[in-house]
Image (cartoon, rainbow, N blue to C red; front, side, top):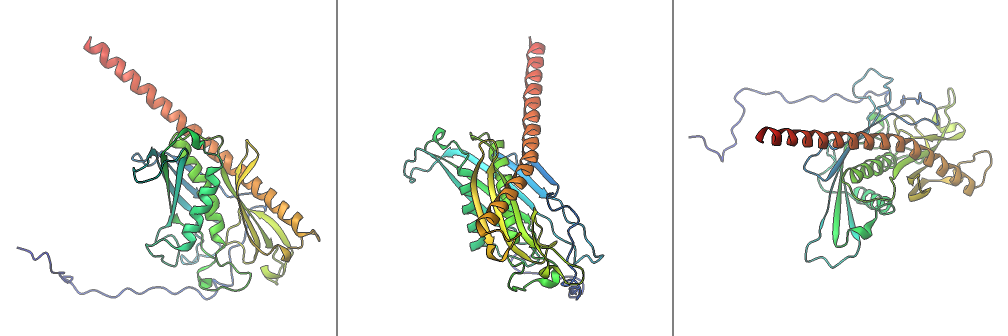
Length: 329
């Protein structure tokens, strides 16, 4: 009889794993942006992937093209899953609420980035959840679900890293530390809106996320840090090495309303043709709304496919039920 409390050693001798080091040239050769400044990356969005949830969605962005042949220097993409559970009655211990209570939970998987993360939620993840709740509350018709709650669970399977592998841990002024959270928030808003719509929760409109950034235009032989600033849509941290300011919005296009605005960076350092700070912020918001409008097109097509699939499934179920009744008669 085997001893279940004993951890048996391996039967054969083993060799300790050897890990490859990052190439020394990876930090100095970032991936260059090949798409135009007013173009976003291709989006894959699919709903109804989790049968046990009321609504679910999967969001993925196109990975930038790798310029190096090294596996360690390949750019990462953005992959997010979201499930919506509810509306369901609140526990008796919760005070009465005439509105629908929305709760968002964001967690980055331990393998979502090149630096392995812990299993406990960090402060940045809780901050993202607050922004997502703010963006979704602007479109929910919460009066129709009194004393009910809905839980939105978001898991980031792969998050965009701060540039090449050799640049990990560098927190230089004006560098890339933490800029990837802005693109993650934009994707989370879009996928959460798709999951809530898939769950059949009443909303006045769909909300889509968009992100725009002010970066420095690279000059030949001078790097990215000495060029002229300009605005790009859907910035990827691995394609730019100097961010000045980034803006993320949650945009309700039909109503023409912004349900969420989050800006980060130094607008004073961006001299777009000598424009004052308020005009720079307005231009950045307009471009972020443009990116959100492009994301909304994908969101609408994904929901149309989901509705058509549900209608076909319901029709096939009725036909099979009618056939069974005729045979029994």
